[in-house]
Length: 102
Length: 490
Image (cartoon, rainbow over all chains, first blue to last red; front, side, top):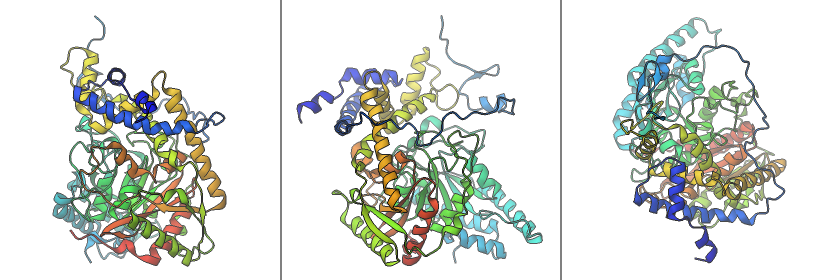
């Protein structure tokens, strides 16, 4: 393995940082496995760097669309009952979540 | 004739003539599911009672049509179909192959399901898939692995492996899947059926649970090209509820099914015949190309120079979009939840940790990294620029050619368990299919022979909204060869 690939490898701290951004409480075994596997995938992706894309615009969507507007008018919607039917916890017609403020 | 072995167009003919009823047909397919699905394991949910009710309604429509033939009978009336479990069906669980959505019951039908119901189609149930459509073998299902009907020790491909396997095993007459990087075409190839990925924007994504929104597209599976065209016709409509649905009227795809391809310009991209491809796959595909030339197509080589960059670009773009789309699974609005945890952030972390499987977490991690501060330009933005180069390659090729042909997958169906511990090897299974999603163009996989008794798929690629050209070549080749008539022995 050359020096460049070594540098690309993710550290344990980086894996933990990404997991926190993604809100995943990974086990120690997962952290190590993902560190290895994601490093290998990112090393493979390094090949993109050899293409000169300085003058190339990015493609976010293949469609020539800009904004798609809909008329601002009242239309039928799902009932509150339907929307809450899948909720793990509901109360008084609302989704119930843990307190976020003291 | 066994009813479950019928194609859609054959069944349609018999239903019209009154030789069979939709109830008889549906019962025969349900019996087939009972007979073989304990081996194939293609379905996550089967809804026999509701299927028979829908079949009875279809029979009523057929009776009404016979009394008044002025009102045309829709081609899918009374036809039993299977639906990938990533497409919302009102009142029927839609799990996306994930434990986190194990108990999710959508309050609405996806637009494609509405179209099928309007036609009087019969929905048999929901098929297994890689969790959230992430995978190439259906082994990433949170529930169980589906098996390839041609060899039960092998994978059916993925992520729409349940739909492809159900169709190959005659457990339905047609099926819907979704294709983000090859998830319709690759399992179609590995199971020996026909699978089509429409142009991005051709079919509404409303009610398709999102994986990578700029790449996802719903596509049909058929036992032959004609059935695939019938299914596409049913679902190819503009939908104002999907802002990426394109308002272009669908042509009559059946008219494209002419066996004459004389003068059709067929390009063979040299970059799709690479080292690492199974030799017997190349042999079958080369033979298919010779057949097309013999049928009068003008075959020539073409170069798509950025092909090798498709895989790394895809595996940055798709996970990046997925990491954003899957942020919604937090255990609040639906799905698995750990609300007993005191802290709200801990509830999110533990819900996602317990509810999501390894490949989904891997891609969320990869995508989050590619989008994170300091890495966005080097990975995500770079991949988007390379996407432009890949699209330009295709634009250039379609100036000279009507369609391009290549293998669908570099190998035939592999053994269950063979690639589960090596994500990069698994990703290589999609190396010939994902560039079409990056470019937003259409493609079909059709059977073109066998290697060691396992089906080989031929991919026909067309420009955006060139489904007719793709179907025409596929149909002519199919009619000249007949590979689609072979069935696995179960």
